[in-house]
Length: 189
Image 1: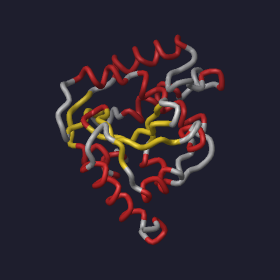
Image 2: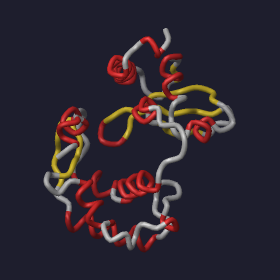
Image 3: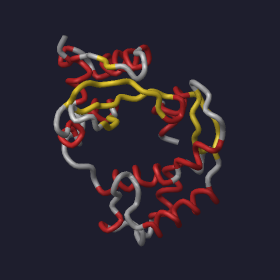
Image 4: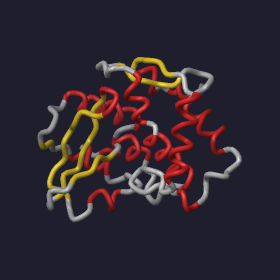
């Protein structure tokens, strides 16, 4: 079945159900999913030397994610959510900075509470992650090309240290349902 015959809403629901119901750490086959994944902005890099197979694996925050296992045995995760958006090409500096900022404080989020299936850890409004990120980088003294993340971490480790300290001192975390955490209503706060 071609993905073009479905709306993005239908496709998102189908993929979410497939991922949720797939066994973990086993090869999976789904041509529709593969077609969607090919829309990922970093597809060529993710594919590398070629795809052996895909797997669904447990991820942070009691969720599941897709992994590409390459023919040479190397592997990488891939976001079907980003792929579904169909944004091929390079990440912007802003997108890279947000990704690096999130990954730099992942240990703080993970240490907040023991993972519970179906629950996420998130920032309490009004001091959301977006708010903290914007406040920290508002003067742009930290956001330069030399700080573009490499391997999902800030290249400049001093920026990483200062950001991590700032986040730890200013964030307030709470457990919320996965649906609440990922909903448009909640994200816009």
